[in-house]
Image: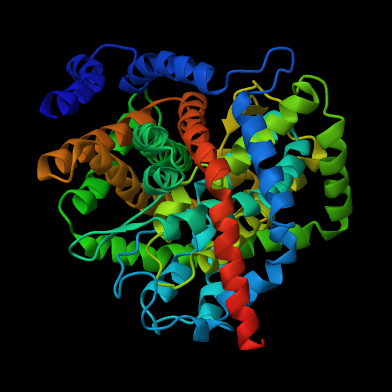
Length: 537
């Protein structure tokens, strides 16, 4: 195991020479020069296009899988939407007995895009009501995927990308239901009462139950390896990259090493939490982030109502652009792919990461948490991402920039390349001049909290691969911290490409498991619905 762990440090060797050199180009440029070729190779593998279609295989799997689950479960994303709300507000709490399916005090860990108070409510009985969970659901799902990711989609794909994000969000509700139900159904509980769950476990245990023992073990290992990479990318590098970009823009920092030094500071803050074990910082962040999320949502509504008369025109552009994209945007499939990539990055449905969090829930019925989880893509993608998209579309109503830009997420505004969180910030500034300062703070809080949360998911996967020793923990955490610096230093295009590829790569092993285990989900759903009928409610 020691040799396998040491081999990972080979990734860091190029950085040693960077720190020893003092000549131009700056540290940011040198790190980016090392990182971009790796990204290009990995992106080419994950986004391999089916010959003659121009559509990546991973997108086809996601779309067809989500369509299948939606149809097979009778449009559960729409038909059971009221049930999901009723479960959240506690209408069926009487079904959950003291002898629940899980442990008495499950350890709950939250990833950006999940419903933290819903999870907390069902794992620590009586502490939070389902109604309170619903009230805080929106604040629990806002993150950089909603702020920077949407800007990237609009910049590349134009307003039409919003339509495909919304459609992906609606279909993803069914996928999220399936994977989170399985996450609870096949979770493992350690001797100390800690819950271990997620695709690693339902792939290995669930497929073994179906007679595919070898395949299950193989897919579980593949998923765990990819999840470690996803924690370095989407759960880490993207967060530090966009936090650094926003700080550099707000403070007017120039020079070839600004991102590197910001990354050092972010690495120290996150490192204190994940290595030093100082949980108080994480607890404070968890209290501040929901507040910042509410402020962000309110700001979106202010901009939307300030442009109220243009709302119908904006939606007209969204629908028109979805099917007749402007020249240079890659055609219909190009806009569709951009929209789906950004939606999946934001809500992670199909990737399986949410199942790691939901597996800690205390419930007698695994399908109950699957029902609750289907609300997440709706809140995260259909509502929040759409609001951000409208803000940017309103901003460009006067032709401030040309959609498509450089094709990597940047557009030209007043002679400067702008993209990601900076574009979103300028859009808000056009209506609320002081809001970029608040957005900078929000971005930092979202980034730090997401990095802390994702370090847990990557660590769980790392432990699945290398065991649960202190040495394994330390090796992973050092690598995780290194990627904070890499993300802050590299270009936005390279970081997002790497992160997209890592998160979407999770789809391959995860969807194979879902397509084999969905009959079990049907059984659990029928069992839960049957129990509800016996209540007569």
